[in-house]
Length: 323
Image 1: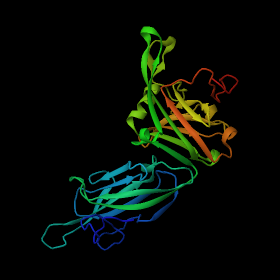
Image 2: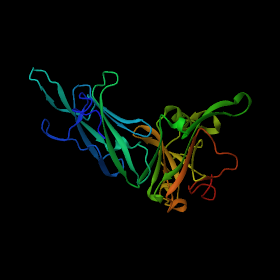
Image 3: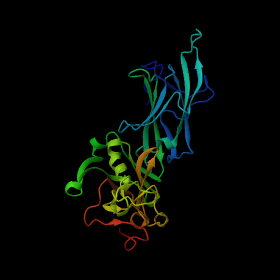
Image 4: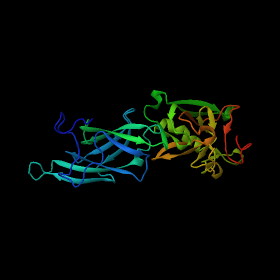
């Protein structure tokens, strides 16, 4: 529902531009819009256009469930263009400005949603970013997600909702012991469509992300003297991806070729999604061919417990299965 629109209760609020009276184009999205076949592709873009009574305008894309701002576009940014201005009282000074905001679907890649979900998002036009509590106009837009991706987002509310947990653990012995920060996420009931779906776990909260980043920069060097960052394709020992209570190997940036080419293989990669730290989990046919829902856990800066096998499809692994 549109709130704060001109002519209603808050006359100063921005107005979504759905006509071409004062501009050569109109907004691609209106309140109640459905965006079909959404898959966060960088090849897809929406051009949003709105009327403001300030030149300090912005547009925010918000997850209504958490209140987190997923993407922000401000005047002066690349991809934000003034498309018109109106001197409504003919005094030689413009009182109204029109701006177009180019919203790449890839900018919304961290929006949490299940595979195949119709996900409501909030498009919020902000009238004047230079003042406290500026007028806003909100649109509801529905992203019709494909089955290619399911996204779990550890955002600002992750610790309060129980999605993420932080702890410390002592590693080593005697004078060599050190306290390590550990992060864990746990999300049951993630909607997937078998092996068609990649599960993306995004660590938007910096506190949650840090233990994973620390572990990815903590590979023991030769004979244990010092540490280094993991190279692409190396298994990160202190990352755990657990799907339906089974631990699977996690690789830095990409899996080794023999794993990536194996349609049976389930594995995780440590990467970034739209600039934020993330795991991308490939579901293999051996365990998840027809699965519709999974529980996904991840742990950062923590080794699997004693006796816990990590499924590893590298040909050099023990029996080709465990390492």
